[in-house]
Amino acid sequence: MALTLPKVIGHRGACAYAPENTLESLHAASDLNVTWVEFDVKLTSDGIPVLFHDDTLERTTNGSGNMADTPYAELQNLECGSWFADSFTGIKIPTLEEAVEVCLQHDLGMNVEFKPCPGREKETAEIALDHLSQIWDENDKLLISSFQHVCLEAARDMMPDWNRGLLLGGEELDPKWKDLADYLDVKTVNVGSNLAKREVIEDIIDEDLHPLIYTVNDPMEARKYQSWGVASMFSDCPDVIAENLLTVH
Ligand code: G3P
Ligand code: MG
Image 1 (cartoon, rainbow, N blue to C red):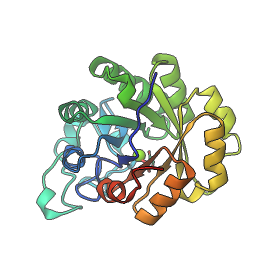
Image 2: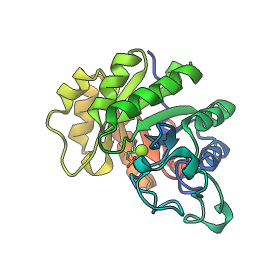
Image 3: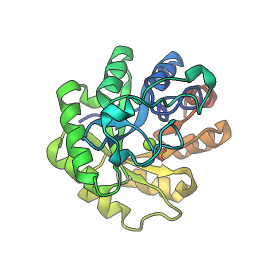
Image 4: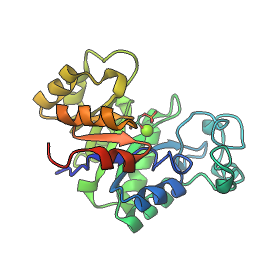
């Protein structure tokens, strides 16, 4: 399946401007003329896919405990905006379906990152893919990614035509990344900026894969990556990065 990536993808929506992984953050990205957004998906205890980054609720909500132990009905009593700014007090954790509706409304491409709670890798991917397959049919504007190989394996098996991206993080590059990329049949390799050395980017390109880098908020850094041939960068402030990239390589 063809994949048309923009130079900049809004990270967790546009999370410098609105609380991460919320509908407000997706709207903010669209207001900035961003064409693609990335967001994180995990399951509530009762198996509802929601947009959320951490395994625990404390950092971004007024609740506490593990997402994996919290049913959706309880999540609806929480708010996830006031940690970011008073003006966002009261907003709710969105479901994957609500997020997709907003993306459709604004014609946003989506990088859906499966971010399972520990031990829930397979079911997170399977349930989220099942939901997505019922509501999304613009395959060239969808990228499924994960650090968890089990999630990408499930995506490859369930939705072979959907584009996948292998996320690489940590302090050192996984020496098996080429084998993994091949086995998981991915189109992109999404590397953390600390791992993004020129040789790594060139290696990814040599494998006929698209190199993506997260998270790039510094325009000078972005121009350097652009000169290396990086396909796309994730940014919390995608407008700032887009404005500072050269239009011609
Ligand atoms: O998908 C890129 C990036 O979102 C991966 O890291 O922790 O921000 O989800 P994280
Ligand atoms: Mg993410």
